[in-house]
Structures are given as structure tokens and as C-alpha cells.
Length: 122
Image (cartoon, rainbow, N blue to C red; front, top):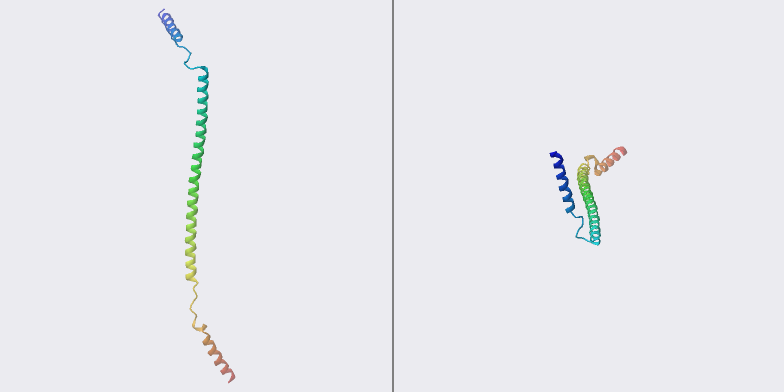
């Protein structure tokens, strides 16, 4: 019996509380529509800003990739330049004109030719 009485009292308090709450607001119908349109436009602007932020993040990542690629290309160009420089210095050092040998002297051939001719003609 106590439970039934408790449930009855509880139900009466809830119905009284519901009657006291008014569903009426202090805004007119036009103001509610204006607020709704304003909220919709703010949501649209927010979505647009989110889209711009996403694009900006993507562009930043692409710029960073490009920076690393350019940095790698720069390092590769420097290494190629250094390799070319060492190759050229090695080539110049190894292929310098050699000093003529003693038997490459034209005067020696001339004198030898004169002596040979004199020996044959005698």
C-alpha cells in the first residue's frame, strides 16, 4: 500500500511540474526563423573554414615534401659536382704530356741519318 501511495504522489508531482513548464518562448516566429537561418549560415561558414584548413594542411604537407625533394636534388647535384671535379683533377694529373724520351730527339735522328748515309755511300 505504501508503494502505491508513493507512486501516486510521485505521479502527481511530475504532472504538476509538467504543467508549470510552458513551451512558449519569448521569441516571435520570425525571430526564430532568423535565428535558424543565422545558425545555418554559421554552420556553412564553419564547414567552409574546415575545408580551407584541410586544404592548407594538405598544401603544407606538399610544400614539405617538395622541400625535401629539392634538398635531396641539391645534395645529389653537389655530390655530382664533387665527383666531376675529382674526376677532372685525376684525368689532368694522369694525362699530362710526358717528357720526351732521349730517343725522340729530332736532332739525334738527323745526325743518325747523316752518319748512316755517309757510311752507306762510302
